[in-house]
Amino acid sequence: MAAKRTGARSKRSQPTSEWLQPMQARGEPPLSRERIVATAVELLDAQGVDGLTMRRLADRLSSGVMSLYWHVDNKEDVFDLALDSVLEYRGPPQMGEAQDWRGEVVYMLEDWRASMLRHPWSASLLPRRALGPNMLSRLELLSNTLSGAGVADADLNVAIWSLWNYVMGATITRASFDLSDDDRVAAQQRLTRLSERYPTIERSRLLLDNDWDGAFRKGLGFLLDGLAPG
Amino acid sequence: MAAKRTGARSKRSQPTSEWLQPMQARGEPPLSRERIVATAVELLDAQGVDGLTMRRLADRLSSGVMSLYWHVDNKEDVFDLALDSVLEYRGPPQMGEAQDWRGEVVYMLEDWRASMLRHPWSASLLPRRALGPNMLSRLELLSNTLSGAGVADADLNVAIWSLWNYVMGATITRASFDLSDDDRVAAQQRLTRLSERYPTIERSRLLLDNDWDGAFRKGLGFLLDGLAPG
DNA sequence: GATTGACTCGTACGGTGTACCATACGATGA
DNA sequence: TCATCGTATGGTACACCGTACGAGTCAATC
Image 1 (cartoon, chains in turn purple, blue, green, brown):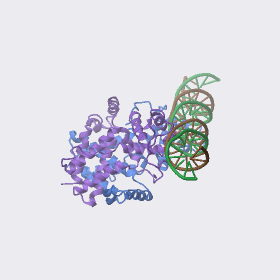
Image 2 (cartoon, chains in turn yellow, blue, red, cyan; image 1 turned 135 degrees about the vertical axis):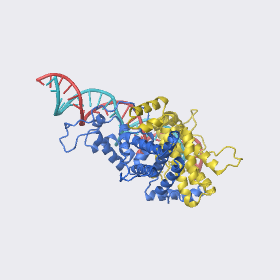
Image 3 (spheres, chains in turn brown, blue, orange, cyan; image 1 turned 90 degrees about the vertical axis):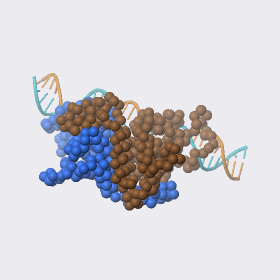
Image 4 (spheres, chains in turn purple, green, cyan, brown; image 1 turned 180 degrees about the horizontal axis):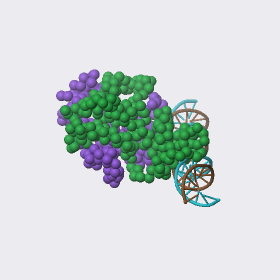
């Protein structure tokens, strides 16, 4: 939820017209917001946050840089769209079977975390970005499920934000500690050199042996116990 | 914990020599890593993450841009140092009285969150930064206290990371939703326009009436109940 | 008096986001 | 048929960015 973004999207108003573009001629399909976002995600996956520049993006799309700005406001806009596009939620499998609410919540939150970890840049991007429709859908679903599970309206905000905070923190942490093995060993060695200052961290091998997924699940369980008993 | 940073700090090797610098003459004290970091924090407070540029930093210090690089590796380095400098922990007040471990943990974690919220840029910076000494001290203290409270070594990592994740998520969320009143109202209005798609969010006034501090405390309580019973 | 090491800084380079403006061309109305 | 319009593309240019390079200044030391 960055500052402004009150209106004023890109210049194009129609939802991407259907007729063939001029000037394409080559095999390339015409530019579109969707194609731009998809390519941005590719680029981010391949090169990370700093690797995404408008020029590189245009190159990959075999278009001129300024053409992008017809479909997109800003580089900020590209980030917002790329992030949200990664957060689409398809719901739990086997829709037929009746899930208990707790299973549903856990599934959704783990899926959220997994979706972001599949694109590690998304975690570090989250803090300063706007809430997109996919993000809002997830929030709505979460609220709705908890509400249906009997969480009183007065407690709903606390529950939602606590869960949101936990998932977000866990994902960001996990993503930023997802070093190569070499890096991780180097980090721990550096720590070992300071072990008289940080003996407990050193002893618990905090950076080495962590079962991230298990830890995430356990902490989530404790939170749910407290937030929505029953 | 960004990628490399194995060694190779700035060119200067001594811990900031004592003798007077040449060239100062003016009232300005000489350049030093500490002064650079302090000024960077000022600049970040005033202008946000994007407002910090090496040129502006040098201007504020009445020095040439390239002089900074004698004391500092990188712009990245400046970010790391500024972030860590904000995380110093002074411990709870009235050291004399015996605190229960839980009070100590809660105090430290709330202080952590408060320190970062005093400098909102720090939250959005966290994801990609290295662990500085102040951060590590806090981690060490947390580990140590929990360990002293009887948390088994096997459960220590889960406990620490769950708490870390929660605090970090809560802080980042809070910081990025810390809009001006106008912005907040605008956000909720935009949401209201979509209220048929997000009825529960709308009904719970998720973006408006939230008691962030209370929610943080409650969620933290539930986590602690689960993680370190007794 | 020459040398050394600590520190400062002007210049320059390659890169960035994007404002501005000149196009190209299908659709539309005359 | 032709002028006009809306959609879309993209070249050029500008201000700004991080920082490599190397020259310069001065206190201390030999």
